Length: 481
Image 1 (tube, rainbow, N blue to C red):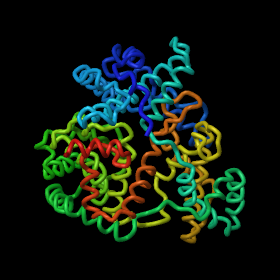
Image 2: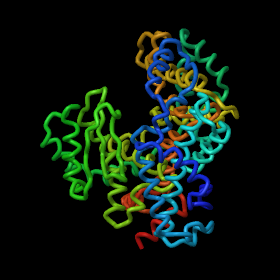
Image 3: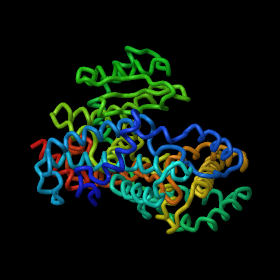
Image 4: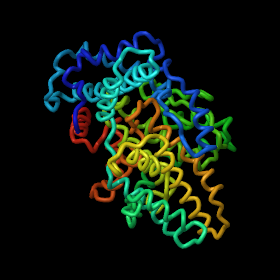
């Protein structure tokens, strides 16, 4: 894995000045220059016309609360570096003892995230004529930061995800009403033809069973007790259900808290630094099966990995090392699917497939060309339309192309938005490819390993690290030695 540029000047010279000019002047972090409320008008027009006009640079690359967390972590990082001193500046980071290496890996993530946020803020000001920074300099800083914290899209994995849609295209080719759409799609997006016969790997049935057994041993009884305490679950008592589960698992006694934040966010967010689970409003009424899947993801993975590190005295392994997110989100997705008994099901299209395809297309990994939000929206809408029409045909229901396309626009808009938020023209916020990237890597490993699955999952749960990066595995082994 390439090391962050700041690894060789981690005393915060140069990048420190760049970051802190933004952070120091704003109490809540560098987010006041963004105007995310403008997103609603862009979405309204996109759903009506099928096109995205303009860009999403007025939105920050992270939410306000995430940007605030980054600012807090940056202060912590600087304080720690002041304590540890120049020994962290060495380019030979493999020679660092485990505690120092953990700090370096943590610092690389935080500093690069901070550069990304501040670069986006300055770029937005420059585009509006309100700042003095060179836009190309801001883009260069942002792009390099993203290269350090997120994996690059891989064409082969994108084609395997597209293979799921190619199967649906074949269904449309056999229908008189939709054949023209299928032929037009293959002509417009030739990489779809190349994707034929490919699909992402899924867990072997025996491995699915072993992951489910592992999760059952830890969560089946607490879930049953929460159901008994809460009764019928709904959006009003959902926060209390989360608190009950966290209490039963012992996390509240370890200093964790659960906070309802209403419209401040949709769904859940785990803040490992603040030891907090935030619960936002939901547009859809919660059910017990949906609650359990969400809690396997949020508490079973995101909280548990941090809590294990904290309880073992390894605080720097609890907050997240550079490039940890794809491994963590992949683990969360696979555990969530295994709990539902679906991690071994092939041919199922999830949001993670859409997001990976959009990221690969937008960044040029699929066809060698950068694509803006409108191009990506058109592709995603077409894929979702094809999927919806194919489902109708399999159910022997009447199809309506206009209706299918309208539903598709609504379904994919948020996926597309997330790849361009806070990005000046020519850049892609590549973060959301991490879900399929991490899940694919984990599935391949679990299907091939001779080790007991429970042993592997325990090892991967020691902290917020990427076990597939040898240097990080070495650092975690050293901490727990």
